[in-house]
Length: 297
Picture 1 (cartoon, rainbow, N blue to C red):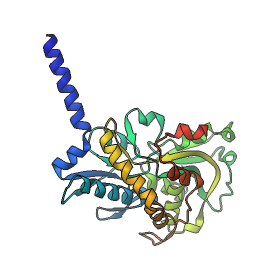
Picture 2: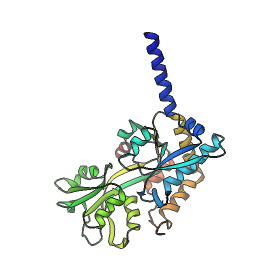
Picture 3: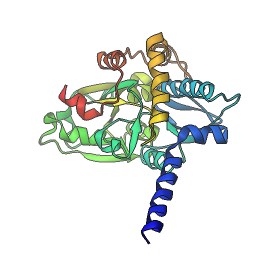
Picture 4: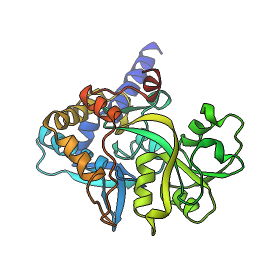
């Protein structure tokens, strides 16, 4: 009985190891599945017809090209799997997605179940409103409808903010960021609370960008990073080494300029969002610290 228990435990351990060995999975299958977003600002968005673009898309593509070279593979098929705020983590955990290249906040709760590459972007959560709304701060949201995307934490940050004490508002939810922005655009919400670059990206793609603006206090500072399965140190090291190489060569800063400062598709508009001091600090000292560490700094 004891021997059979040991064998079962060994088999379970081996199975777990195989599931977490992403490099072996890539080598054996000749393919890798990237989790991508349809409307995550300039980080990850769709161009239609199964094509995707953005800062994190390109960072992932370059990291995977480095991994392909390291594995000695002549070809590597990139498969794209659209994920949402709700299903991105489960799809990484169950192996459907090998590397999630979207707009995911690295926080302590998520680190219990998944792992993150070194931080590539530090976000500030704010709110978008209509330019003629007169809303300039949190206190003015009392009695208003506030949109956010299902599966995100943005409204939680709003409720915890000291300026929100005594402010009562109704939450309305979009299934994705484009849907949440539509709630604001159509007048079904008075504000849309989300990552600043996602707000800027959706405003840039609006029929009339001048009708909207980003307003109010910074609700949260969050490290955004590429996500993958937990307990796979070899894959994490491969991705981290590639990103750190991009930082040292200046390629990451050039990619940032390409996606956040220059005109981008589909509307050929520029977000004009310079890299924040917090983002530059993350590049200067590459790390995978969670959001909670930023709150203490």
